[in-house]
Image (cartoon, rainbow, N blue to C red):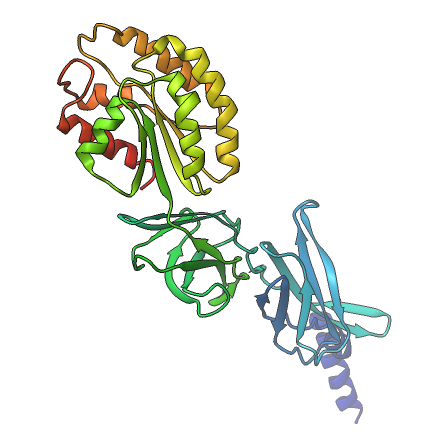
Length: 375
């Protein structure tokens, strides 16, 4: 018996030297690290993890960029609970970690933290900024960028409040427009957009945007004899032509503006192409247009100031005078987009029939150039 006791004592001594006491080793074992996963819906994030048997509970940590570190945002005191829901904000990227803990008397043992888990909440509600309808090119829909979106879905219906069907997906977050060429002339269409993100294979959608009606956008051309010639050459009855031979500033002020107001319904693209007959009226043009353009835009119109094109041996105006006129119009007329026809013709080439008016080929060039701004 004495030999057995000595042998056992020697074994115990060796065990203590190598491992510490057996009971202390078992008691100080840390719990396992949970494996974290999660989903998002709207502005809510639900975290899930596996149950750790030798644990008393779990701690959830959220990374705060402002502080550069993780902070505990949830303490679960029941090891059988394996999910936790947090409410945040839409259009956000959150980073989480989890660890389990084991309470032993006055001591608490913690597992190592899990790998970081990034979760994106649903993107914010999209906003459609413009719908432009052109019979020849289709319906252009534009919307605002949403910071975290990974793509957008476009829906269309013939009713404002029901029956929307998805017609396209725009992947990525660099394109914020889509042209729908599948419409039928004479019908009214409505559009809605929603954004999406992906979390570990799960797709999270934003709310649908408010419905936006697609209304046929109208083009109005205001000009002199050059515009009148374009009207005859292209024969486009979908354009409203307000033009008259030999006219300029006074005609614009006293006649054209009245006709324009009669034609406007609040969804127009207005081109103003005047000045070749009276470049000396530049200050009057600028003053009048700066007064009228805000009114047109308030009604929903887009306005384009068209540079006066070149002449060849015109007895009443030189290209130098035209260049000065164009420079001031571009610089001093506010609230309008500038169509630099002068530079376009300089690059593409042009021909006149009488020194002032362009031949048919050049007129078609000018028409296509102007239509490129709205198509």
